[in-house]
Structures are given as structure tokens and as C-alpha cells.
Length: 493
Image (cartoon, rainbow, N blue to C red; front, side):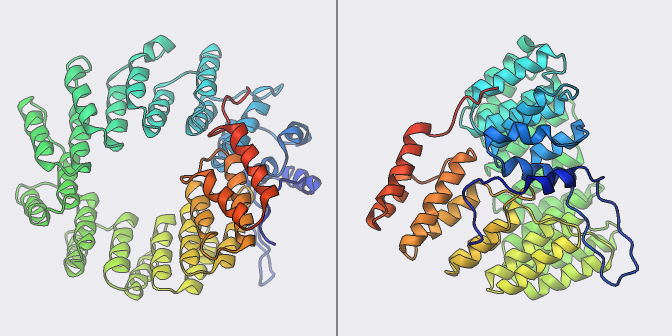
């Protein structure tokens, strides 16, 4: 079976030898087929961390002949993002290294990971350690912490963290004020953000960016009249709206389904001599496309080129997405090919939109060809790429193919996230096979081990195992549930 759930000691010597290689260079050879370059050093290290037990990890890493640098460590932590406990274990190992010292950016990554795990005790230990070493905490550190509290539903706590920044040697300023407003607004806690804004706007001397953030918040929750009030207040205060302000409002009208108002606002922008940028046009292309006005979206796309405003990759992404969802995927691929022929380099979002479009019409083989093409174009598939393919294979009842794709995520290249596990575990109940429910149980144990909590209860998997006569495995899962509560807490640093 291609799916491995138990962490076994791999052939570590092979990895240790690879780690001693220089970073991959461009290969030139007379052979018609070039040999594939070795995997990046950060990928090798991440794979090594993942495939060693916590007990063996320190000993294994000590044998590595690696010249540690902040950049390398940051890249490894990013690859280990979806295995929080292992990422923190790796960070801990290097924190006791005789010659290497963590940078503030590495601490920020570790704090972000601890926040995702909702291990606030470890998070604040890391903040204290940064301060002792006089490398932080910085405003960026507090931006990470507040965002983690808000995403956990603790917006009040996030505000308290902002107000206590100075106690940790990091005074609040206008930039950090704008950051907490942005975090609250993007989590749709706009009422709270606006109340906070009204109280502190004079103290921090709110600027155009502050007003734009609040206006964008109201637009996110489709309350465009409130956004227009913010625009009015901004002008009354003597602040000149920027093009960003107008683009925020334009997008707000489209988001709220106010297509007529959006178009009229766009025409007013042109009439008043606003220098429309690529963001403006991309907003209109996407806005028309979402409501099925494909011809108008294409017309605006062509118009921007005539006006001398070159489309960006994001503009092409918007048009391709529109065609996939509201027209047909063949036309989307024509635009994709046109984009490439003009020298644009597709990014992961471009590929993901096309792959989703192909999956949606049942062209799974062609979708997998585009996944392979991503690798050829040095645009590595990300977790969203894999999740799209896995979801559609599951929806089509092709569980084995979904698991095969999942197996390709093993290692340091791209780890599964919460959505990956939830989709697969849910799919394991469709066929009601005993073997499928065993896989569901193994997936459940693996995701908890990696610091995730399933959206559904342990009881669903437990009941499935009991009904199919697998009492022994059900007891193992029950022990995991009772031993960790909801998630493993208080990582020992």
C-alpha cells in the first residue's frame, strides 16, 4: 500500500549523504534527457524530520553535516508547517545548537506554529525567549499572535495583546494599530474593529490606510453604505482617498452583488480621471465573471489592453477562473495557453484554477497532466492543488486514486492540512467497508499526531470501527482521544 501511517526509521544514511551536497544548480548535459536535480536541501531536512521519531530526531540531526542559516531554517519550518509538533521539535533542537542561533524570523515562524496549535503556553515562552536574546518581539511578532488569537475565536484576547505590546518592549505605533484593525476586519469582526478605531484613531493619528482597512472591512461583510460613510469621513478629515480606496469600494459593490452600482462607480472613476490600474480592471473582470457576465468580463479584459494597462498574472487568473466556472474549461485553457505564449509565468493559483475546472467536468486524467506540468515548469503543486484532486476523486468514488494522490504528499515537499484529512476521512464512510474505516482511523491518528483536530467527532470513527468488528483499533483511538483531550498541549521547550 502506498499509504504509510507508522513512522519508521528510513534509510537515514541516504538522507545524510544528500544533506552534504551543495544546493541544486542548473544542470547542463549532452544527453538528450537531463537527469533530475537532487531535491532542495530544505526538502531533504524536512523529510528527515518527518520520518524520524521524536526520540531519534536529535541524534539523527546531530549527524547531519549542514551549515545552518536563518534562511535554511525558515524554509524547513515552512515545509513542516502542517506538522506543528515536529516543526517545534526541529526548532527546539536548533535552539540548543552549539554554534547556530535562531533569528527573529525563525522565532516568528515557531510562534505562528504554536499559535496554530493553540499552544499559548509555548507561544509566550518563545516571546519571552526572544526578548531575553534581544531579537524581539517585533511588531510582526505581535501581528502573528493577534491573528492567531482572532482565528481561534479570541478577538478580545487579540485586542488585549495589542494593548500590552509595550509591556514586552515593543511600543504600539500607527503601523501596529493598522495591523490589528486589518486582522479584525479580515476575520469579519468589523463592528469590533470600527469601535476600536473610533476610540484610538486620534491617539494613533489614523491615516488613509487606517480608513481603507475599515472601508474594506465593511465591504467584506457586504455593508457598502457603511464603507461610503467611511469615505465621507475620510474626506471631511482632510485625507485624500487613494486609488486603493476606490478599488476597495469597487470590489465591495461587486462582492455585495450590486453590479449596476459597481459599473457606475467604475465609469465615474474613469470620468474623474482616476489612473485606473491593473487591480481596478482585474476587479471588474472577476466581478462580472462571478455573476455570469462572461462577455462583459472579456470586453473589459480586452479594453484594459487597449488603454495601455497590461494584464497581470492575477488578471489572467481571474479570467481563467471565470471561464472555468461560467463558460467552459476549453476556453479557459485557450486563455491559459495565450498567457504562456506572451511570456507570463503561471503561478500555483493559475494551475489550481485550471485543474479545478478540469476536475469539475470529470477530466481527471487531464487534470493530473497539469499537476505534472506544474513540476516541469518549476511551479511545485501546493496543498490546495492536492486537495482539489483528492476531493474530486473522492466525489467520483475513486477512493484508491485519492489515496494514491495523498501518498504523494508524504515527505517534506507538501504536507496535508486539515482539509486534506477531513475530506479523506469523510470519504472512508461512503462505501462502508471495514478496510476503509481502518484507513479512516489511521488518518485520524495521524492528523491528531500532527496537531490537527477533526471537524467531526472521534465518535464517528469509533462507531464505524465498532460496527465493523474492529474493537481493538477502536480502543487504540479511544486511548488517543482520552490522552490528548482535544490537542496535545504545552510543547516542552
